[in-house]
Length: 552
Image (cartoon, rainbow, N blue to C red):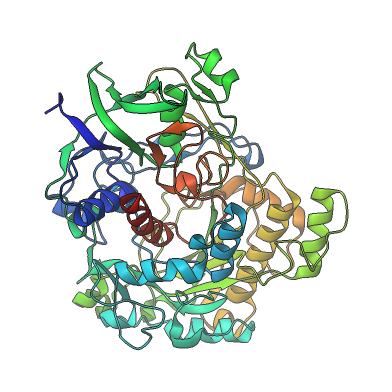
């Protein structure tokens, strides 16, 4: 098998690798495709399908990368969970499905100079992959595709605090979106949570995109891409891969789908990247491509725990409320609403001016000229924390999450060594700009107002159970207090992207600049921040990538 010259070797069997392998073979059944995955074959793993699975993050299907200390987070190092196994992150994530807004896709297309990546032209691929839970909006949603998307209501769930939380957002002037749908081009407002589960079970990419006819190597680590100088035009050309055990496998094309951390690492181990880094690790420089590993974008999260008034009434999981024992409440996470909001443009413009040194032009600045989705907020009807703060899983608390979607801070991925078994050096560089700090303060203030200063909050919430070093949150909290809370409590949302950015490292057809026969198709190529949980944009991108590559 290994002596064959494959048409395509695809490195990484995560979401993108599964989709493009399946679709390319569907489009051309004569192709020989070898899919190589560092982790295990997950297709028969029933234990990872359920909402109460306990072996997802932190288990054997997780790379568990330690990050570099994050300066703005009190120099804390985070453990960055990343999927390891067929399905990648989609094998261990929370299954949330959010496309993100039209404006983000349009910015992507504008940045790379290719209209195929705007919202209108990605929409057919979004619809192609979907098996949406309803047929009421065929202009925006597909039915009969491989990926079933369910809403809270479609599974029969209605949580006790559903209407009260909705009324709280209404009171703050955050409207409900048409059809409670944030996946129809505009996501600013309140919508129902949507998840990729069928009958409550995870939709695993290598199952819903069948890999019959694709040859798969699992538990196999790739060391580098084999490159040669093409005699025809003098350009570099990908000729296959070398495994960590030294085995070489030949191919006509190589596609890296190893993710936002492993794809830049693989390029650098192959001699493609910033020459200073390659030389530092005694790697022969085949192509000096400085942007490899730069432009790391990630969404930060901030959790808070809130003590309920009258918890004996059974508002949260862990209480004795018999409603939570009903089978429909096992079909998704205990959330009703996904709330996406912008920030006041006057304060935002002031923060931009601090970062950029001059007042921005509101008519042309990308963060000001359109209404942008900066923040996402969840109210989750359960809570547990083992320490600082100690919160029992007894229905006495709920928790919240504020996610920042459009960071202007950028991190990086660098080589740790020349050994592929060593994870890369990950510098998240959160909250490095005034814009990011301002947006996050505004998000936490808005959430605190919801929880303490609306009719919902006053009736149901006794107050925040804060970490030991802090007084509980209040609506009038200062910038210094909020910055200290974020520094102590900020964590990742596990959405790394941008490290092999389209327009910089790859062109708009995923071809690595300066190398024939080599592409990258995964979250690393997303060139701009996406106000979304990345699974939905990546499914659509991988669908179109398969069509583009097959047509070429």
